[in-house]
Image 1 (cartoon, rainbow, N blue to C red):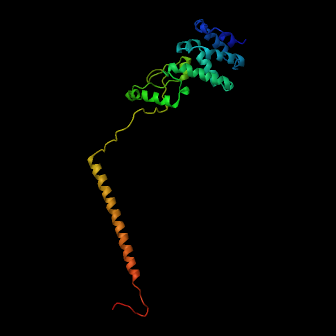
Image 2 (spheres, rainbow, N blue to C red):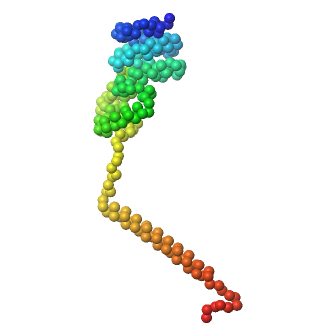
Image 3 (cartoon, rainbow, N blue to C red):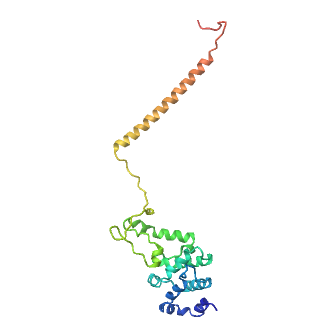
Length: 229
């Protein structure tokens, strides 16, 4: 029986005891890269990730103190990690990060109707949140590694850098008013002038066309017959 089988075979009720005894610290050491920067044995990585998937959701304090969150993130980003293990790491990161970011539901398992109902239920709350009261974005890498300490402008270590603009959650339903009544009158007068000028050209074209037909109706004889004298 492999390590994962030993841990999971009939000891589900002892998982909390394993966590209290610091099993995460030991697992972090086993998952850490070797001195030559190579990954541990494949079976070690597979079995340990399977065990972590069976454990209850680990809180942020345990992730920080044990370093297991940083170790799993390292495997998730490593180019030589297998596809199966990267999927396991991604699921673990998703499970651990949802309580940290106050995400109580797994959106991948929700249907379209459930997501629409959830968005509708949270819509009034989002409208009440102002731009100043919005929660800033948090780096999941720093959260799992326990380094989620934002530095404000003026503090040591603060660096000005370009940031991705955050979308506005406001609903714009009121059309802005004109700057002055004078601009409104100018706009109306320009519209009238444009319409009258257009009608003038149409009438001129119609008169020209009518006059041309009248000229083509009069026949001219070389011998001078039928001439009005």
